Image 1 (cartoon, one colour):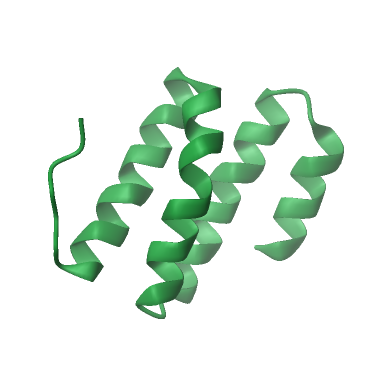
Image 2: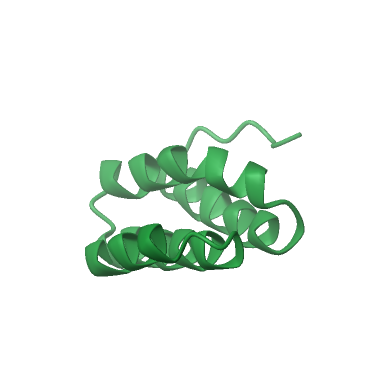
Length: 77
């Protein structure tokens, strides 16, 4: 359960951290969280944050055996 965070910057950082954790523990949860984490970073104009989320998403795709998707995501980062 994620704590309720109203500050957009803190929320983006929290989502990125959560995505990082799930990328190691539960690939399906990481995939599900990716759009929300990208949206949060984009909402605050955090281009580095978007790139980090995409890098994590590419790692998740790679670990899932989705090499083509990995490459597509990595190219967006």
